[in-house]
Length: 262
Image: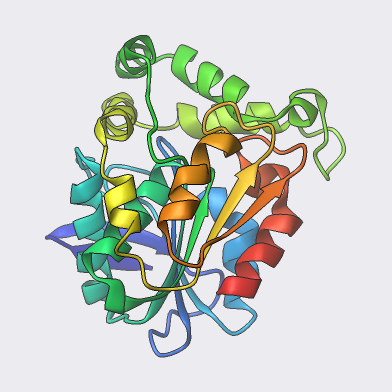
């Protein structure tokens, strides 16, 4: 479905069911350079099991109009404008990587609007080397290849896809490679610049899950510990063998964890 947010068109996948804001709404946010397809299985399952789902393309990503937003706080404010446009309140929100920081910023800005929070592949700080930003801005395959190489865990590097013959790393390269170069570079700069995660965590008042990969080289599970400690009552689950691309590498475990909290 399409929404109009701040005067710009926004696309959201709804999992094959019409979005009904009165029916346990769920909002899913992708990571840097990605789009709603990162949540394909989770979007469809939740939509067909009692929730009403918006898996959005952030501004400048996928089918949503640009430009991309320049900072995590800006994206957090955009989330609230999106919920206004959708007529949704008391929302369960999940975010992956950059999307997790955006979800956290949105919840901190308006705690009463959210009933649950899931943060996947997250650390309070997400430093990005300037060379990777430069590669992203230049376009071409280098940045998508580096991000996918670092993003997937050891098993996914060699195989491990549930469908024989499919290679998860190539899927990641293709997905990130579709991103607009300037938008991808802006995403990475926004992650690197954000320093407000721990302050935002202190404002969270809803049930919260941190879902982490034990083999994550981009947001190592051990570095997420201060964030879990800063959110009252937060539960942390670490998936053995998983890297940063948790929804793809461990789709069933991700779905089970989200279904429990959403």
